Length: 53
Image (spheres, rainbow, N blue to C red):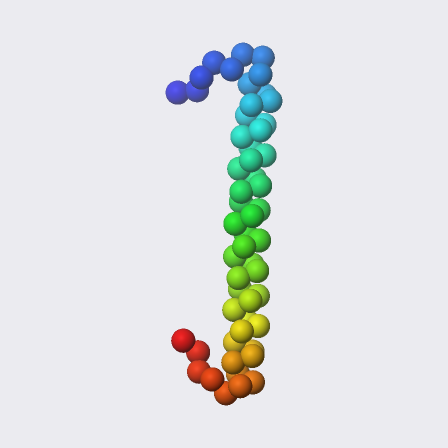
């Protein structure tokens, strides 16, 4: 069910591909930073003698 894009097919599909790639990069960066933040919080809590959860 691909619409007929004619001579613009490459540009349109490239834009879709780039947009998808950027979304994936943003999701991965968010997950990576979240893991780093959780680890830093655990370290602070360990220094203060608090339990996790």
